[in-house]
Image (cartoon, rainbow, N blue to C red; front, top):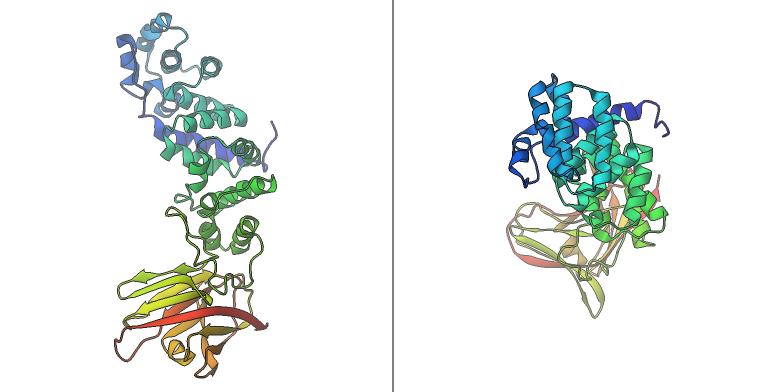
Length: 394
């Protein structure tokens, strides 16, 4: 088994063992009274054995005889191995005995957790992947298994094995790829990105909901370019630096469970305002209904714009000046700061041209359409037909 990133595996696998030790309180129901004492506490789990320290003493050896009742029962054998380990403290013997658990199937959660201990202790990455796969297929301990998967994606060999497993479309694939809420560590976010890029590179198409959760995570750590690359691989060619300039895609219906994509229009609604994209005889349109209170964000989109100067060409209902007096436009950087647009050419027709007040200092800023503070509160409707972002200089 190859070494990974110098000493990275020596660091990662103990962390996996520590994370796995959180699982010691979940057990399968046992079927014989003689085994019941094993399921009453954490002594059946080798992870807990390692954590507790001193062995429990010779009393545990008295229970070894229960294995004779059913020598092929994985739960029983696993419990006996843990009891012997507690009694003797002999780690080398325990390693050899725990290896037998793989030959008895994948039916017992406790045995599977003991195999996690075995694979982590022996640095056996393929066994670790097999064991995690078995737990995921049983839909057990998911809230604890997903963090282990996230932690292990920093390991190159584990990523390779995980990508191979995902290519076979196991039943847990969609749930895993959509479980990004607990991804906060930049290394683990990078690990998930590398997994997904490898899946795409292998010709396997990710679904929208498999792809969507990782994109804002990448954007949040300054990896918007990689996020954009994942999205365009899924989406195909898009307008740049602003996509869907005529709101054609935004007007298409999405399934009720469709997750948001930051590089598409995100339309807001709240107290006193509502934004909606639709199609009519002229094509796509963005309609904003607003009572004039506050300064809400009506629509936003993560752009693929690079640092530099820009202008906006905005087409709407005449007179466009009425819309521009109510709706402001700005490019916002992830690290803070915003550049607003001011009217350069606005008449009573349908087209307005706005220019940025300064150069945008960051790549991949977010374009926001927001309410300008009004002298009074008068409800009204605003319609935009297209918004184009055009680069004008460095």
